[in-house]
Image 1: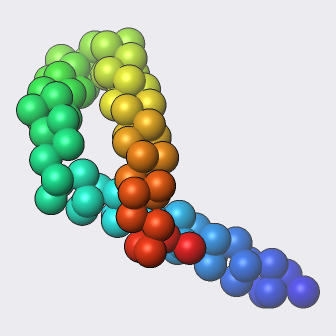
Image 2 (image 1 turned 135 degrees about the horizontal axis):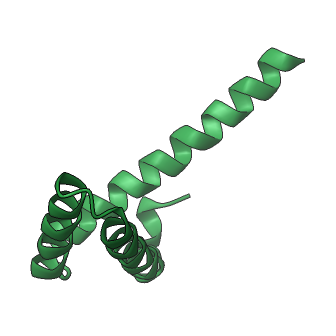
Length: 83
């Protein structure tokens, strides 16, 4: 029983990861907010390097909210790529 539950959990994780990778690839290929994404990544890495974790956390949350918003739009537009 435990093995079956772990397999189901792993399958769910793999599906979520696959969807996330599709979203990333579609976003990059469509150049959705590419400048903004790049800027956010720079701010996050600089903040981590400078041990300004509050800034890194804030910008990471903003980044993930943006990704979630874009994912809804992409899943609607490209339904055939998602289960």
